[in-house]
Amino acid sequence: MRRTDCYGRPVRANLRHERLLDLLDTSGPVDVATLARVLDVSDATIRRDLSALESAGRLRRLRGGAAPALDREAPFERVATQNPLEKRAIAEQAATLVPDDAVVVLDIGTTTSLLARALRGRRVTVITSSLAVYDELRDDPVVDLMLLGGLVRTNYHSMVGFLTEQAIAQVQADLLFLGTSGVRRDGSVFDTTAVEVPVKKAMLQVADRVVLLADHTKLPGGGYARVCGPDQYDVLVTDQGVDDETARTLAASAVEVQLAPIVPAAYDTQEVT
Image 1 (cartoon, rainbow, N blue to C red):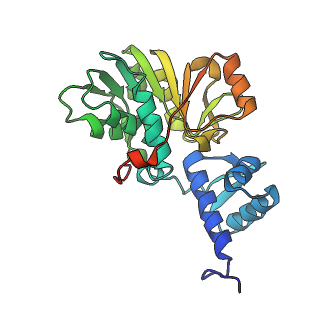
Image 2 (cartoon, rainbow, N blue to C red):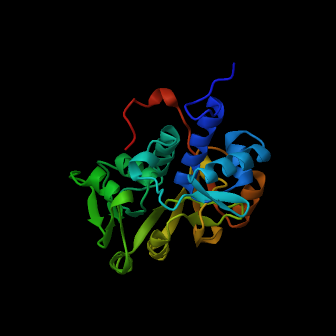
């Protein structure tokens, strides 16, 4: 007998729907082919899922894909629970790229907050618009911490607006660690929140070297607001190899791809925050 939930939906389909919605929440707009690949089902199955979820008001259909419902934006705490081992591995790999006495800009995001944790006790200067990064480093006696001003975006623990952009323009950094909602196969970096994009663009202008942090769910990934092309970052740190088309594009732009080793036994059971 086929198991169903309280709405009469098959349990397996219900779980897939929740995973699909989680992907939209964390990556923004995603095309049908990417959803099918990540969820390991056919394009036809994804299209049926999208129709059902659209009818229930849980997402918005777009040409060739879908986006979160207008009233759904995943809070920082929820995004932090997605792929925690991969994010922590990426953060720890990224920390190895930071030399002592470096001036580092950390973008917003759950992975950059883990990078901040990995930098505790290091003789570095950290500049950030992320309140999550601030929380990780505010009591560290060694790290010099500069929090950029601006309008507080409470849902995602970040500072945005013209004051943030003006403050960034006053500094110069050795490294920028950039987060993303998704990377297209042409190497373009996208975000799902338009208000964050001007801050990211301002950060790109003040760093000598740019490192992009993206776990495998973002390669390729979604997003509708373009941040930059592959010519504007130097290194991609991820947890799995990229597809052939993306690899060729990144190689043509001289982007170095570093894979972060994931060793689950090495991690404790502390929840990623």
